[in-house]
Length: 459
Image (cartoon, rainbow, N blue to C red; front, side, top):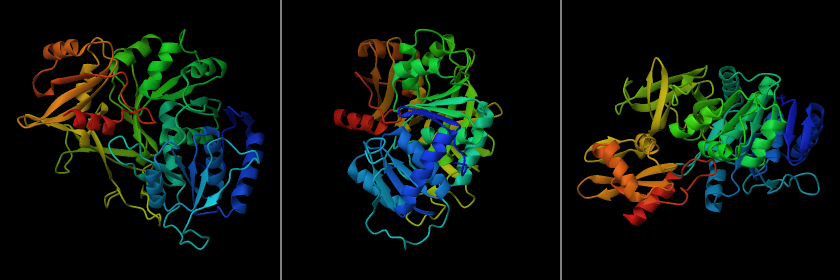
């Protein structure tokens, strides 16, 4: 977050704030923080689902040199305590609503912390828990310079500048939502801030406000298309899709209706965006262009660069300091040359980066390594499947049998018949489970841990 910079207008459920209103409210909030000992170098944890409170605290903390650590209020208490210990949080606000009747949120000093606590090794602006899509989340430390670099590069590739407006309906405790505030502050652009995702309200506000940019995960896009009773407004230039793979059927429907889709790839460890490209009817899943300041390699199992499929490796100005630790020491999760080896599979060539799914989710059947995302993408071409997730069941002969869990009206017998015709060899699923809803994380990604638990229970 650029210190001292804020969006010129912030539209929230609590009312519209222009720059003067925002400055007055932040002055009061900063004074409240300082009176309670929240100052430079401290970590303030925030447990709330209030997008408004999170945004205001982020702006206020950026001026004070305080690291804000927003947390999902639905997170289990043991997981939350583990993350608070990882980050060495000094203070905590646990506030389910925007503000109490007194006008200020109550600030708790955490046990074992004092004003004399040792200084942190690095300047931290934001701490974010990773999504936990494949296991327990970690906390990522992001420096002010990383947030600034990420925002600047994102604004450049997405054409976001002064006079524009970004509608933010993403969770306030995920990097996607927080990055929008940085981009708007840097650009001098407005933010329309929603309290959670509501497709009907989103459609209404897209027509009410001059929204030029919008961030969604695929599940949100699907629901928006269901309620939209016409084409998108002409002033909407970018609908940035991230968080999970966008299937080509959904992309085709959205493009046919006139929605300006941009496919993206990013993560908490890189202050959000890594790469993005516009989707077209001719290229529904385009290779992605890297943002400025990011270096990318794809490496094989021995760590050597490869032109084939391998793990994505990143370095750049928007990269994290490292995973959180109480002293704020940088480096955890990075190699000696400051490269970050992701858990994502991809392929890189002159056209761009193709992201193919998680490396740590690779299935092995009949001795062949199978990325579940590749199979899932094929399954979405099957009539009667709206969403799908592939997992593996232990098999004494094959190692793992592929089992697909899917939403949609197609019967398991119909899906099996389609797979026999269209998917060959070890990549063809052998078991089929129709479900009413696939389990999702709070950021809209499929909860693969829950799917693996289902597979274990049924195997």
